[in-house]
View: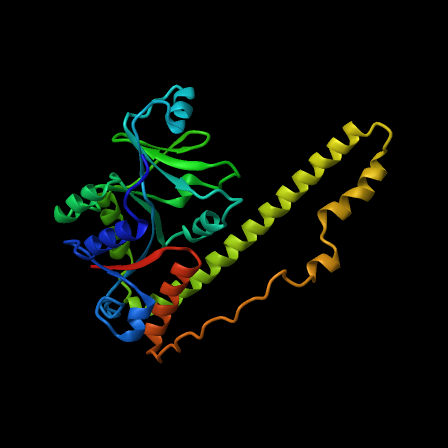
Length: 311
């Protein structure tokens, strides 16, 4: 069954609950609110106290009630079984988006990067979880490195009460509960007691380095995929053209695989409208400017919500 809640609603409910964690202070960082100086926009972050960056990408869960579900069938082929009913959320395939590859590059210490997904899918369920202060406890948190690099096939993370699998080729992976996540964040805070102010430069540098790593991996994968397709086409030409030699095939392929200069420099087939004028950002103190830039990069490039977790 398709989810009946939006990613925004789930993300808002989960983030709001994390702010009220008993043993931790979790402050979501919203760039525009930092700029406007509004409560909850970053000024709740205590720059003189230790802090750990937490990056969350919110997912909606589908609800599956039959063993005919794709994940249930694929898992059964391995000799394992997923409980019925179960939940799943999609992870965007590599040919559609570079998002997961970028998240993989960001998912290195000291960062905490997770897909967050609920164990519910209906409006009445999220309302009940909200009133019970149980949105986080009814969620799972899956690190991108647990999923690994994706191929072009559709992929999903499926989970029941006992375990979590990544599919299409089923493989059991680890996830965290909200309690597990809180424990890991507390341990990280105990290991590095430097004030957050002293680590803001590292945070922005880490985001930039992650983008570079991710783009390099994406570029390398695209080159490997192009080489694979060209080789497949060579074999196809050789098999289908008994009278053609390899040299003839080699003369054909470059024209197919490399765009001509005329094509690359052609004008778009429509007139590009002028962009609307944007609001000029206000001047900020250096620390808040770094925090704003980090939160903006997290949202714009990695599609994640930055949360600063403090003791």
